[in-house]
Amino acid sequence: MVTSSPVLWKKITAQNEIPSNILCKWIENSPLLKEVYLRERTDINTVAERLSKYCKNLQSLKIENCKGNDNSSLVKSKNLCHLLTRCKYLNNLYFSGIKIRSCKFFKLLSKRKHFGITKKCSYYGPVSQKQMRVLIESIVNSETYDAATLFTANNRQISINELFSVENNNHVDVPATVDHIWEDIINNNIDDEDEDFDEFDDLGDSETPENVSLTQPSTSAVTRLAASSAVPNIERLFEYSENDSPSDEIIDGIQPEAVTHAPQTRLAVAKEEKICQQAFLSLHGLGKSRLERLQKYLACQNSTPPVDRRGRHETEPNKIPGDIIAQIRDTF
Image (cartoon, rainbow, N blue to C red; front, side):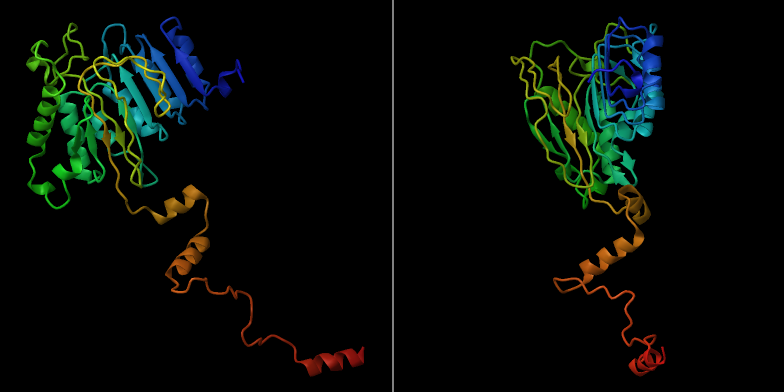
């Protein structure tokens, strides 16, 4: 069903022909919005801030070939972080052709929780060596890497769990290991005739030159982060080689239209964690007594739960004796 009222909209697709003020009004009046696709726009900083403020039910965000504003191509760190902290249901991020300098954004990707439960999140977009280091360090420190795996463009798998296991993560030099992973990804995904890209390995804190493309292999990679309270079903992400062309296959609700040949990485993380009992009850709309009965049932050694005898008197102290009842009947 197609409706002209933004109040009922669940998806918005906007290119550069839609003015910024009109798009912002749509967003402000679309509380049910779940999917947003932005392409070739120059107002991402403003739009991202509006999305984080008014679209709490946002689940998927796709941005292609966009700039932060008219004067800068960088997307502000604050706006990206607000999307992760305010939009609790946002689990699909697809970025292509944009510049991200923020390291805090990637740090938050591994720490997203809702009612104490680690959230599942998929990210596909540019990442520098420094950003990857921050992301993996955050995962290692929070010990949410039980099923963590990096997938490069040629489908090589690098198990994070083997590199940073629980028993030896205190003895592993995380920065040096990440640098080794990055170098290994670069060496396995670049032809000999490619240009020298050493000067672009780390964006650092300086302004990125306008003529530097973040699709260069040294400054662009693809990361997929999936974190949940149960081990996720790890699926292949984008299996494109250098000679492949994009397909119409929709993955995680996102349809890819352009694929870079930069180092591509997928990261899947899972860990079972203890959660707040009250938060669990509130999330599922349960009462405390129901949870207590379930706990008693699970603790019971028998296959059947004990008989519920609430309200029944074992010795029936309040029951009127039969002879008294007979006297009353005879009297009346």
